[in-house]
Length: 143
Image (tube, rainbow, N blue to C red; front, side):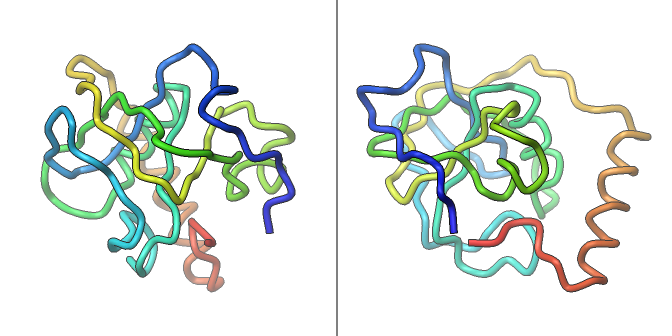
């Protein structure tokens, strides 16, 4: 259970928020919970995940399941959100990745078109790590 503070729309940072995925979306589209997760066993996601860093969104896009192009969108939360407990404190003290989750939809504001992915070596290392966790029965995202 996440013990972090819930952040309201009025408290949110002035910086943009990003969502990495393989979904082909348009400005104004909503990204909502209740669909198959981009990760792990692809169970129905209880939350929508996003970040205030392009680095975290890049990982999201690169690690998303599927064979369609990787995409990163600039999004705005439509309701309250909280620190992502899958990264916050479990893996990194505090929230240095500025990763969040919400049960409310995210509205697509724009697409980031010119972003640089990780090197093939970095990507392989991360995928190997996630495969080891999967073998141990640990999901990448625990709702």
